[in-house]
Image 1: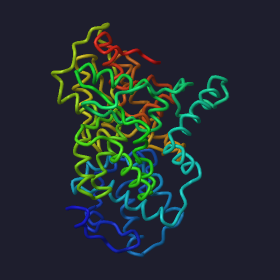
Image 2 (image 1 turned 135 degrees about the horizontal axis):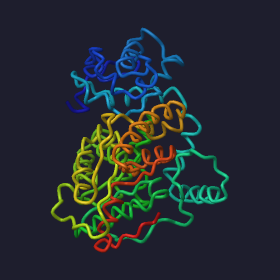
Image 3 (image 1 turned 45 degrees about the vertical axis):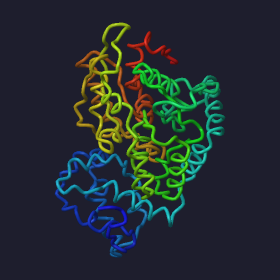
Length: 404
């Protein structure tokens, strides 16, 4: 059913009626909800949150502080969706709820400041350089979700004006993790593809704005991204969160142009898996072993986490975690807004990584999302992007230089 055909409740939250009614409270989602797993609180579970949505939407109760906390503490990992026999679109319900809430409540100051900076690339790079200086002077507290060594200079490098594919570079990842984009571009070029970067003209994808319920801001950023990128060229994304956002533009904007745009967006691993015959043979070093951590927006939102393993198979050995893809607790801005709960959720992931490390003898974790990588690195893990590992193995063919 298209967005224009969706029947809504007309209640306080005005959610899709069929989606809100679909939950039968069976509880099969509970083991897959990271916040329920660490709290044991039904208000922190998908079925509990849906029950609370129904109560407010029908007017049976008002959205008090306790109700708002229940909604605020959802990671939007969507791990409950694959487990649901009724196919409840929980992500859609939560997105609609946050949109309704945002109309009557101001966004927290720390998030407002962060979102303000993200959509202004020059300000973001200036702030990043300032943080880099403070980091080198050891004036930043430990445990912050920051790279181990922020770039001091402008991390961007001159790129092509056109190419066979566009690499979407986004905002904070472009400023904080330029080595990832460099590795991804090197791998793509090793397949024979020419690559252009989206750059400042496209900027932020709007994922964090959408997560916060700021629908109009998310739509504005989506329109900017679409206008900035060349038509009829595949758009490849090396950040799971950004990829999920771009793939949702068709639903967010509801226009034929947006639907067509989303149809040419792919996670970079999915594109490489479809073009595996173009990948070069490994040329450097022996095979190493890595632990694979699936970002929720790759596993649940995009459903293409298997492509990471397909691409890595020729270059490294992979070890699986035993937690069935449970969220790491990063959740976009969640680790900043809900630090205690994010840390509790991360402890479960850390325990799973430690078990995998003990069994395999490797400490290296690969994750295809910057938020996950930074959140896990802040807990002491050695986290790399999957395509950094590939770029290192094909270095003579790719010309890749590790910027770490």
